[in-house]
Length: 123
Image (cartoon, rainbow, N blue to C red; front, side):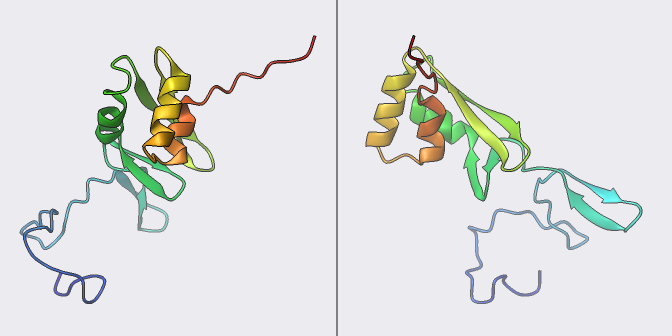
């Protein structure tokens, strides 16, 4: 790039995309060329990134937040037709994981993955 984007944004060593000799940057987004239109189409987020609606999370960072609460806890990104992905959580005590994440101020998208969604019905 010849100019920072957006205008006025900082340039320097924090810029972590490698610019190739042809002047292009690999963003690590999987994509393909639509032969009918000649346009580049993004197929999803970069590896290790989950996109939930307009929010992006690094899966490794999510695991690092959950591990101190429950070493057996884990998250998975599941496909969602509207939001891109949704987060599902597992662990030995999902209720405790949910509570601790909420206390720490975690995003409701993350904490909600551990909320008990079972409903009890009246007999």
